[in-house]
Image 1: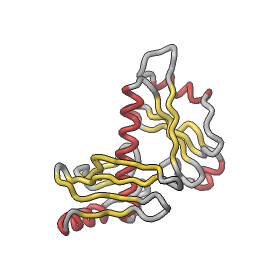
Image 2: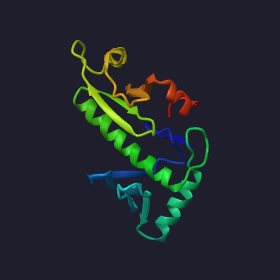
Image 3: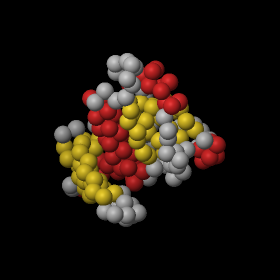
Image 4: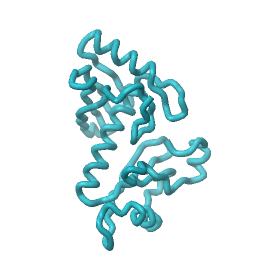
Length: 183
């Protein structure tokens, strides 16, 4: 099993992945669609209408449907538990989005903080260090002590390159809600 970098989802292989993601603010949420591929083969689209409904897979054909079913049956969360198709699809889209956000921040010479609210919805903060050249992840971690996080943040992590996401903020509420540690 392979553990994905940003979501910690465990997958049987890294061949199946999201290769593009488009989002639209629909006023009461974010609608999105993503292309799901196995290597170069398009399996189908992952969609969410942004109105609180389910994330759905729309396969190209029955072979794609079967491929995704087999993949999902082998995926596990970071505790080793099996996952629903919707959770796997959401995690694949999140993995793509987080990787894209990290790459953008790094290209801009910035550091990326990912925080989560009480219902596990993420937000991001980018910042720069003025006295050192990137990447100075240890300096960035020290600088997080001076960051002002949104009031709703119950957990926060800093992207630290090869070390991945390192948690630097956790409230008692997060301890109650996520007793096993960060995701």
